Image (cartoon, rainbow, N blue to C red; front, side, top):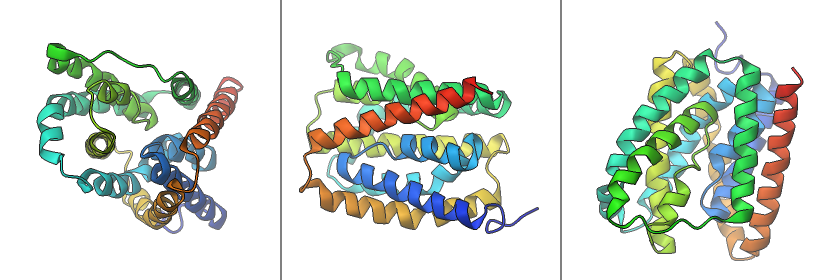
Length: 253
């Protein structure tokens, strides 16, 4: 069995570093997007299942950083822990499907997920505040979020629900960090259970932490110099094009 260093070529190692630097930079600017970009671009470089495995350590490190960078952790946990439990269930189901579905099907799901993410970014749907149904609605939201995360690595489905809770911008960013950390832990446990997370892939995933952190720092420094509105427009357009390309590849197989 090849070691972590031997599993990928030098060119793939370089491209993995570039992918995670770019993904980290986007997260540094807008507070989200690392999983979708890392898996979307990574699937082109190394394939869908390895790309999801490579996401684990950089996603965990950067999301923990985001989750603890605030003073509302206890409040966020108190409001979202039921959803996090259903995320565990949904993620396990998603990874179970990931382990069994054909690559073309997975590529189709990933492509549609990225296109949907892009469309959501442009349309910016505003959901009404769930009010007294917040706890009840959070349960199916967690299932859907986990299912999509387990199959594609996208941590986006629950974001509109979090936005509907009326949180301040800083608390929302921290809440996304908490939610994404839980999603990453669930993804790691489910992939290990389905034998999709080898020691070799974990070594490579750990190696991707540095470019992801460097990208995140660079993105945070650029945040005050860029028009976030324009940056989001370019980001969602790029994700839409990437999703279309991945979908085209999948359908063409």
